[in-house]
Each structure stands twice: as structure tokens, then as C-alpha cells.
Amino acid sequence: MPSGSGSDGRGPTPIAGRSRRSFLQLLGLGGATAVAGCSAPDRNGAPTEDAEAVEYVEGTPTGTQTLNFLSVDDTPSANRIQLALDGAYAITPEQEIFPLWADITSDEGRVYTVELRDNLRWGAGYGQVTAEDWVYMITEVYQADSNWAGYPNPGDWRQQGEPIPVEKTGPRSFEIRLQSVDPAFPLRPIMWGAFCMPKEIITRYRPDEDQDGLAQDEEVQTLAYAGNLGPYSFERWNRESEFVATRNEEYYLREVDDVPDEWQNAPYFDAYTYEVVPEESTRLSALRSGELTATDIPETRVEQFEGRDDVDVKVFPQAYMTSLIYNQRANGSFYEALRKPGVRRALAHAVDKRTLVDDVLRGYATVAHTFQPTFSRWYSDEQVTEYGVGDTYSHDRARELLREHLGSTPYRYDGDRVVDAEGEQLTLDLVFAQGSQTVETTAQYVAQEYDAIGIDVDVTGKQYGTLVEHHLYNSWQGDGDPPWDAGPYNGGPRDQSLSQEPWDLILGITFNTYPRTPSSIRGFTLERGGINFYGYHPETDFASLFETATSTVDEAARRGTLAEIFGALSAEQPFNFLNMGVEVVGYDSAVRGPEEVFGYSWDQNTWRLGQQ
Image (cartoon, helix red, strand yellow):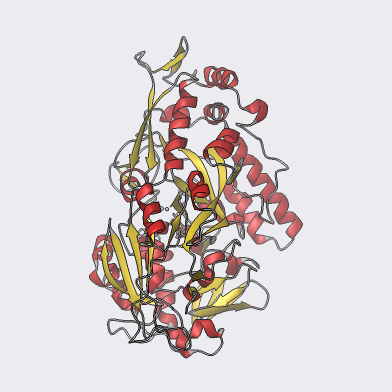
């Protein structure tokens, strides 16, 4: 789905940003802080009962639809959940493990031991967090053959199609036994940032495989089970307007002595609010007035905030790629053609990526040609094919290739325009996520470029949550049960698992490129991948290539296999790789903590105001 996180999360995310489980994440929005008052902090910086409330209000363009982490993989949901649930552990910008709920260790990189802290307590009377909770969730949800809970990434907990063995070794410890050595496993978004819920909740719904019952459970949707497991506690939630959490006075990290001092007094705000403000100009006005302490700033508006004394503008490297996504499922008006790599390559010639980066994004991005940012240590362009730049940006060439590859489809050129089998003008529906002017401008620019090669485009903006629910989620429409189900974003084969509403093109959903562990992009590239809502069927055997990349300890060999993957993706063009952006966030100048590095929000719980 994609945030103010800058972390290497997972899943689709709004272009405005993303946090881990950024879930993404998507999923994703910039961190925001609004100061309701900040007088009389105690000598350690934590709020006192006599102090006026200090509230962190994050302005975001989108709301969220659920707080059930077992069935979502989008940034807005994950950002809210993370306020009440820390997750297993964090990863620092130096790629070191920072234990939160747990530490993870291994002697040889194949068997990993997870050790939980002894002071983790569920809420709602569920008692202490145990290894039994984790093992049951992994085996009965993540590894369930039926994927009954709708977990979007079931392949994470399998190797070569088989469940990864997970075994309880003590009240607070369990082992993960990989089939082969994988020294990067802790950096993958599998245990990293993983949430958990009490076994007793899951057992209420597991026997009948009641996905709806679990999703609608009041304790799940209010995070009542969170106990002392996060810096904040759920207060209230209106899906399309606000989410409010208040400081958790029982936060477990205040009871430990193996973390830096600033963590032992965290968090430093009495409340944390996600305020949904769909209109960009309204959000930015609220930032100027102090109603929001921070929010994402579009590239086109950065100059308006530079040099101000009351707002700090920070630019963060991030892992999210903007793509023009093609619907290859059977409810698109052009799906027969979009299933052909030759057609997708033709369309890639039609859009000028350099203009998008330089003019629309004002240089706050880099051109993308494959599924990895250039700052990644694993990036390689040895086999990458470039489209949409230099000589490969050509309307004439795009028309030539379309004429060549449309022959076996119902579509053809009639003069300068592309028509369908009835001779009617082809019109594609492009849906974009509202909330960012640059996304809307990009959508209009794509429509202009497609018009130049004879294709009409209708452009429609929708709220992110609506877009996800109506266009990304898809479900089985065929007879009987689906032959397989990879989760809400991929409910089965592309001819029968369809979204609620048809679409042809989508913009404003960004994809995590996983620069720490690039083999994690497999869920975007396999037919049964958990994020493959667009119905892509690869010609390349990516499953085998990813298996090779993850199973070798030879870094040179891994780099070579990844180069082959990146090259094949650039050639097949499952979607048009447009650009790798940055996250530009405006903070109230009193905020202390954010640093302009990749993965900057790992310690967000320790951020504070300058007076604290």
C-alpha cells in the first residue's frame, strides 16, 4: 500500500511517502507535529501532569480502512498501528539491529533465535506476550495453506514452497529454521518490524477460517490488545478524518536498561494524531499556521518554505518508486494488449521521464528504469534496458511498436488513432491517488503523451483508501473456490480475480524497492505474488532467480543474479518505471530528531521539541 518513515517497508504506498508495514509500506505520508503547548516538561524531557499537553499532529492526504495488520500492507494503516505496536525490532541507518520487543541472533545464518523481552504485556487481560503467541500466529496465519486471514505476503514465511519451520524453545524464545543460509534474513521485512497479536484472539476465528470475523473484531479494530507494547495507546479513530493515540504511561521500554536514555523517557508527546487533510493547499496552510507541526511538502512547493524561521525543510532518501501501473486483469478495457511485453515496451517509449523529473518534480527525483534505487549497494544497471529517455523517448517509435504488437489483439490503428474491435476510439481509465498536486500533474502529463500516440485517457482522482478498496483489492469471481489466493491484492488468476471497479492505469501508488534486501521485491514480480494486484505474468522465471539470490552467501554471485533480475524486469516492463523520489517533509522548527538519511524514522519515538 506505502509516511515520514523513510524505512525499507513493504507493499504499495501513496506517493506522498511511507513507513515500515510503510507498511510502506504504502504503502505513506510525512511525519507531522502540531504543538498544542509545551510548557514545564520534567527534567528528563517527558511530559508531566502539570504541563500543558504537547500534541504531535501529522497532516496526511489519506485515511485508512482497517487496523488489522494481518490483512493489510499499506502505509496509512501501518503508520497508525505502529503508534500502539512497536514491532519486533528496528533497523538503524547503519543496518544494525535495534531490539524493541525482541532480539534476533544466529551463529551461522540459517537457524535464527528470537528472544522476547520479559516485560511485554498484552492489553485486554491477555497477560504476558509469549513465544506461543508468535509461533501460533506464524504457523496458523502466515503459513496457513488457505491464507484464511488474507495475509498479503504469505510467501515470506515459505522457502521453495514449503513453510519455514518455526519452533518454540522456551516461554519467551523461538527458532526460525531456514532451509539454507541467509545472512540477510534479519534485514528482510519478515521478522523486522513484525507485529503480533494474542493467540487467544486468533483462535476465536481460526477453526472456521473467519476472515471477516477477525477483521471486524472490536479488540482488533481498536488495538485493545496492545497493552504496554507501544509508545501510544488507541484513543479514537475516524477512518477518513483522524486517528488519535495518547501517550502510553506503561510503555515497556521505560523499564529496560539496554537502550539509550532517550528511549527510557519516550515518547515526548502527550498525543499523536493523524489528521486527514485531502487538499494539499489546506495542509500546507496548516503547516504555516502551526496547526500541523509537519507534513510532506510537494516538490513544486519547496521554495515557498525555504528560508522560513518557523519551518524546517528536510529531504530524505527513500525506497519508493513511482510507476505507471498497467491493469493486466480481465476487467480493464485494454488488458489483452497490456499483457504483451511488446505493447508495454511501446508505451514506455511514449512518456518522457526526464521531463517528469526535471519539470514536474523540480529535480527532487531520479529517473528509474528498474526495481532498485541507485543508492542501493545492490544496484546494478549492467543488463538494464532504458526507455523514455534520450532516443528511447519517441512517439514515432511508440507508434511503430504498437502497430507491430497490437496485431493479435482486438485493437488497431485507424489513421493516427487506436481503435477497438468495433472501430471506436480507445479510451483508457487512469485513476490517481488524490492528495498530491504532482501526482495529478503527472497523470495529466501521461494523458497528454498517450494522446500523442493515438490513445485517449480519462483521468480520475480518488481518495487513497477508496482507490485501494475499489481498484487494488481483487477477489475471485469464478465458479467454486479459487485455485490459489495470495491475499487481498491478488485473489487468484487474473481472468477471474477482479477488482470491484475496472481500471486501466494507476498513478500515486508507490512500490518499495527494498534496497537493503532487494530479493524482497519477489512479491511484486511473481504471478502469485502478494502485491500483484495488476495481474502480471512474467516470462522470466523470477522465482528461481530469487531463490538463487537468497540462498547464496557469495556476494558476487548474489549481485550477478540480482543484475539479471533487474535487467529482465526492465525488459518486460510489468509497469512503466518512472522515477525514484525523495521524501520532502516540513517540520515545525522546534522539532528535534529527524536526520536526512535513508531509514530516518527508526527512532521517531525519541523525537521531541527543542524546549524538551
